[in-house]
Amino acid sequence: MRPHAVHAVIAVKSLDQAKSRLADRLRPEHRARLVLAMLADTLTATAAVPGIVSVTVVTPDPVVADLALSMGAAAHPEPRPAGLDGLNTALADAAAGLRRQYGAVDLLALQADLPALRAAELADVLTIAPRGLRSIVVDHAGTGTAALLVRDPVADLEPRFGPGSAGKHMAAGAIDLIGDWPGLRLDVDTADDLDLAIELGAGGATSVALHDIGWPDRVHQPVRRVC
Image 1 (cartoon, helix red, strand yellow):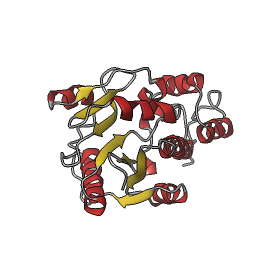
Image 2 (cartoon, rainbow, N blue to C red):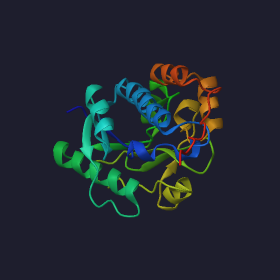
Image 3 (cartoon, helix red, strand yellow):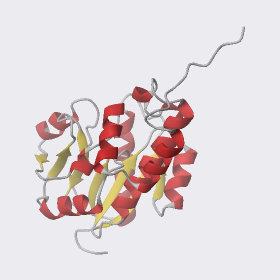
Image 4 (tube, rainbow, N blue to C red):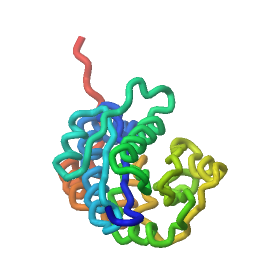
């Protein structure tokens, strides 16, 4: 095992819960397609970083798990029950599994919806992150966390993702990393986020999905109920 190698973990919810904030613009099947495409681009960029030696996707969704496996990532089942703090429980469980499998290793928790991510951005983060500490990359909104990095092979991941996660991570001692990483910082939740990802240069899978969906012209049309 290479010294200071990093093992990444990404959490993805069930596709039927995918991107609810885009529900007024995209039908459920289109949102699911978009989630899979953004995950594929995130996995492609992450796997291309020399310091990252494994990527694990933790999910309850078999379609997401199949995509992860097809791209060379590992699939970790979401713990049941995940509880109210499902995302963080899932990430912590997957991180603990990595430590059981590989021993004392560094960990990276990454958002799954980073369609404009570039491998060079993540590589730069790994280079500047101080050893022995927990570090974060704040998202483009300034309040969330795009990435949580533990450059300490024995410290727990301790994820605090969710609303206001950047402040929560820093209150727990994480260092805010400073750098020009627009793709890494851009996790997609809204239509504006998606348009910004297109401007930055979305990855191949996301670009194809958006073309097929007809974004931004095609919007969700209410289904007419037949009595």
